[in-house]
Length: 113
Image (tube, rainbow, N blue to C red; front, side, top):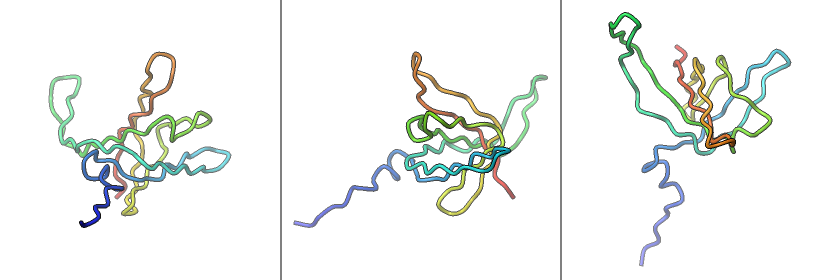
């Protein structure tokens, strides 16, 4: 009977991937390895306050609070680098909390050109 390796099935079914989070601080950069970042679908429109829709490349990552670590805070201006060496600058961060505990960070990113 053939052996089936399902160790990486989460990359196909859960749309998670390994990324590097770079925390940019005045005291120096800190890198954090995230093994299961969840990449959201790419959006192309964004509403404005006056009701118009603007076209842009919106993309979001969810980073688990356990993997980021309790001593680190994700902030706008930090970067996420994927396995293909694409660098995304975090433009907006939302802390996701379950009760009083941190679940993770939703990070809207902008691809660097």
